[in-house]
Image (cartoon, rainbow, N blue to C red):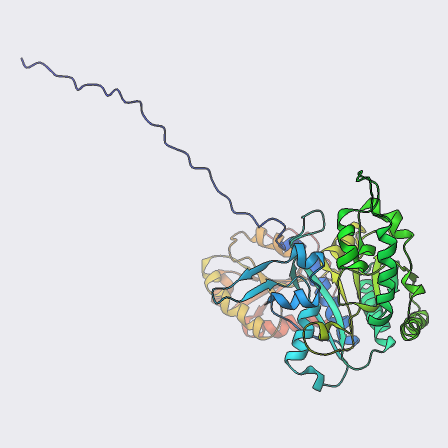
Length: 461
């Protein structure tokens, strides 16, 4: 008998299968998705923006997301936070130095010059809507990719009526969104001539506020110490709490205006008085960009301390980017901020009329469904369906949830008879109609404007 020889047992310790950590992609920091649930708010804003812009004779312009970085460095200002800290800059394979646009105005003036818009009837009235990019510290209501809308009046004369019209259009847009009790803070920062004298006064005042002890809480912040020499007007734009009492005692630009700027500002206020529009003078308001001159403003809603819109006159921007002085005034609005306010005060969105809903029963009916749905598309009648669902009850529930006034029920019997059942979702009454006449029948019923409030009617067994 041959003895069995057992195989030697392995002394190796079995290795545990290494578990790779599951990686889930997320939106980049500071970027956010616009989800289907929020789309009705965005659609509301886009629709109101278009209506208001068309009423006041503004036409739409869209500029590239990427621009030459120097456009913003010259136009927005090398000493601004946007250019110094927040601009996304990249170098292409061809060696071009480009930037994701941090704002629209410089791009619009570039387009105005590049495409010879000065040959159009002046002034040229433009509006825009789209994303901008700033490398800020993300927080509630502030993103690195966010959306702006705005109105610009470019060319013609530096007429105060256009300043007032931009303010008016901006406020009317916000009011059309049902945001009430707006207040406009308005100021002037003068022109090249009178502003220089004011800057010197401002520098002298702030130099006296630099802390000699170096103790925290004494004197002005480090950013303001730097701005004294690089960009004095930005001193009035500082948000650091310790700088606020100092800012309140700073010299006022209103005491240093030349005659021309004083008259211009006086006329702007006279136009606003005629509208009428609630406004307050804020001699500390300067805005954060270098291209502004004369009128500047911000718009606030009652109960909110963040500006929903801002803007002003920027006659020197064309010259700053290498061309000539071009009279211009404009505004910009933060879309996420507007939506946040609309949600906070619970502004109801308009209820959309439900679409006709197509219901299929059985595989044969589903196969023949698409040509019928296409006939409604050709007739420009909105129609919805749930072809992935089989149950009649489930499909009628979807129709009811979507507030559809009419359901079209198409089963195997109807497919053979070339007919379709038309069901009134309010009353549950239904009748059979030949397929060749279904589009006209639906048109007739929709034109009757019956009450489309749905009732939860159980499907007939």
